[in-house]
Image 1 (cartoon, rainbow, N blue to C red):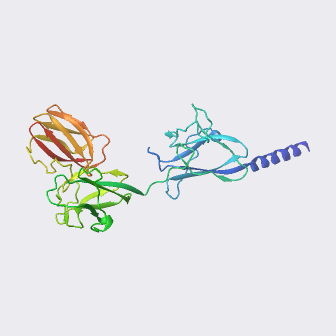
Image 2: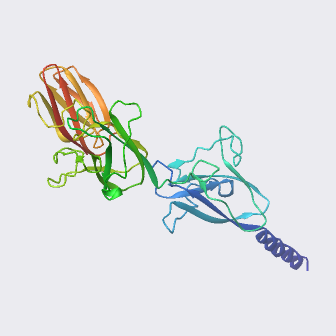
Image 3: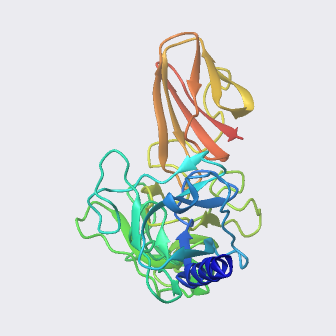
Length: 329
């Protein structure tokens, strides 16, 4: 009889112990994470910080990973998000409200509610959601008219984004330095073609189809730009990919004054010259991305941080100038 009663107590205790858990769904937004990962995981006091025993999933590929696990009602648990069996883990702020306040071992804290709960989506390493991903960007276009030899009243920006409308995008020169500009909001990721004109197509630039900022079309030679974020474009000379005073033609003067190799280049590029000088490297937008002095006959320059693409290397020596096209892989 005593054995029967003991068995009944144990079964009843097991039943109530099982009944005292509830499902909690955890969600982490990895869209702003700048590292590399395969699978985020949930680690905490409830699973002995086991590493990869609680992998999360992202069935709709929106960058928000989730996992649902049963936890004891009323328990206070600590946890954090990691990935790939502790290959990486969040660094949380002990001053944030969702953490334990421990500056050395900063974990998230949760008091398990009595009912099944889906926790709000949080950004990796934050108690808050990730900032909304922008869909558009403000791009400021600038053209230097100081070397323009014709007559004009108002330069304008025309392109695929405004159907080459003529005078619908007039530029301004607030400080009267003859560098005109206009800012336009454009969808991120768009590739646009454009050119500068003036006075409702009273005149337009003639661009070089071999220049790096153009589309290469010999009949309709337009500038090309990929909208990658808020950008203030450099002031380029009318009809050129470079600022006024700088040649956009390859090897215009002293074609053998500087040599560049390898090309395409990855990681580093070497310049050789018979004289000291300097190199300015410009991207497709005409933005100066690298500048260095060349004191030696042969000098290797790091390309670290540069995106793959086409660049113009502008050489300025004591006796010569030269422009070269560099492909960075």
